[in-house]
Amino acid sequence: MKPQSAFLACAVLLASMTPAWAAPVKTAIVQYRSGTNTADGFLALPRSSGKHPALVVIHEWWGLTPWVKEQAEKLATQGYVALAVDLYHGKVTTEPSQASALMRGLNRDGALQDLEGAFNYLASRPDVDSSEIGSIGWCMGGGWSLQLAMHEPELAACVVNYGELPRTPSEIQNIRAPVLGNFGAKDRGIPPQAVDAFAAAMKRAGKNINVKIYPGAGHAFENPDNKAGYRPVAARDAWQRTIAFLNHTLITSP
Image 1 (tube, rainbow, N blue to C red):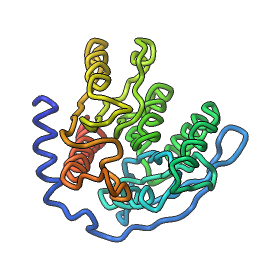
Image 2 (image 1 turned 180 degrees about the horizontal axis):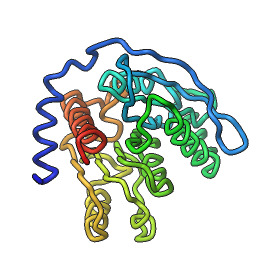
Image 3 (image 1 turned 30 degrees about the vertical axis):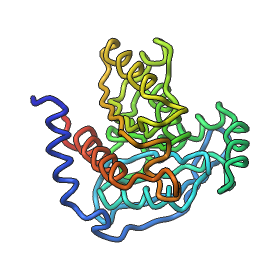
Image 4 (image 1 turned 60 degrees about the vertical axis):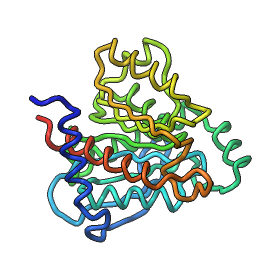
């Protein structure tokens, strides 16, 4: 088998040749079981029939914004059943101080329960291949994407976009899914040294890890709502890397 980097390079080329919005998708707000409670999510479905790979999509500290829903729709155009969870249960903000307060006030056990519930909901759907479920998140959601990988042994792929990274050997040992990471070289919260240390620790533990650090990019460089920090070229490349990784990991791998 060719090295994963070769697969990614080839798949990136194919992804770049495919229009991001090749076909409209079906969307709905759904409720699913989260422990003894219920949680809501934004569901985006491919138009094709049959079973599909699926993704738990995890929002930034702003909440379940239109941009995150758009990412779920874009993933659905690529053939994925995408469920964007709402960890804040209806609360959304554009104010950094409020976003910080929402993130700090998030109950970690409850949030993980919502993510596990989302995974189980997707696995139960007749249009989902339960062996091909991954996670993807940005900022706060990137860290939660890794948390789900640490706690859900059946997760098949994990994408982290400038999210908080695990540090302890026990946390890293619990990550079974292949991980793709996209980070900014000027991110003061998650500096390149931390990314390099995480990647090295993953490799020492025999884990599947592929990270890229984008020069000139800071935190949240993929979101155009981040007017000062948005880097369209880097964002486009990160998206192509993501689709290439997911297609290889969830679709073409045996």
